[in-house]
Amino acid sequence: MKALGLLSGGLDSTLAARLVLDQGIELEALNFITVFCTCTNRGAACLASQKAVETLGIPLKVFNVSEEYLDVVRNPRHGYGRNMNPCIDCRIFMLKKAKAYMEESGASFIVTGEVLGQRPMSQRRDAMRLIEKEAGLEGLILRPLSAQFLPVTLPEREGWIDRKRLLNIQGRSRKPQIKLAEQFNLHDYPCPAGGCLLTDPGFGRRIRDLMDHGYGFSLNDVHLLKFGRHFRLSPKAKLVVGRNEEENQKIETFSQAGDILLKTVRYPGPLSLLRGEADVTEIDRGASITARYSKAKGMEKVEVNYRKFEEDQNQSLFVSPVSESDIKRLMVSE
Image (cartoon, rainbow, N blue to C red; front, side):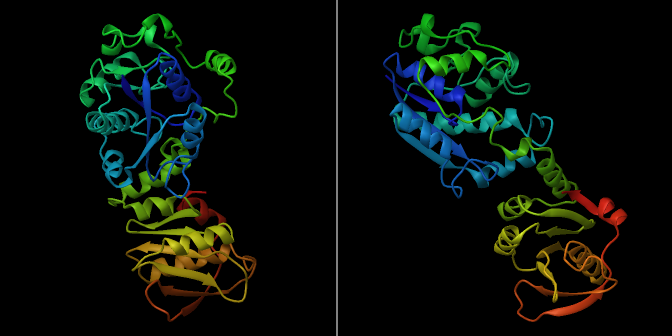
């Protein structure tokens, strides 16, 4: 009998997989990555899940669903969590993908590491029922860590899985999982904080800023949100300011046609990117902010070069570094 295990590489999903493997089930791991994942190797695969499958000795199938997933973030039917995390819609989306692959691969059910009551939005009893129903997987999702608190699933009813060997963990405490990991000799697993940028308050403010100002946002926009300090200069223009040389390089990498790049002349400082509909006022303000974060921030007037990304010709202007009060007023996120 074959099952698919949704494997983030964290402790819960690894333990769930091990419990099912110990009952003689053939298991293939699935990992869905998006542009919002923090644990990927250049977006290619989750490092934690790769390590987990090596430990478990099972195959891994990776799906990069970044482009499709943007629609989930833009328009979640079931809303957001504390920040910009659409956890219920995210779970439905991933499980629908898993269901499609389940039918293709010949697997009979799906295994997850969910723990009843651990996550306030998606791991409540009613949310789990809703997710199963909307994903078209009622009775086909086995949650080994909390199974004894949940309704009997098809694999238990059919005798493929012995329910008595499943667990009764619930709540946010990690002690039962840590104890079980010791029994299974599992070590060096990731912390339980999760690897999704959408749960981060600062990143959430940046996404919300894009949405509040009429941006549909693309993958390029999301990548750019990961770097620098962000400023809202006008309803249609924003500025991203690098915090170090590495971020300067990444900001330049994700610049595109129409963007304006700014840099101080003769003094070390950040590379800044101005995106959107920018006139002389926004360019001047962007230059002032760029000067503020350079080594010339104490000077009365600073020369700043600027050019459109697709052009080679620099133009320059002299500006005063922006005031602290304006920095606070314009900043979206540090």
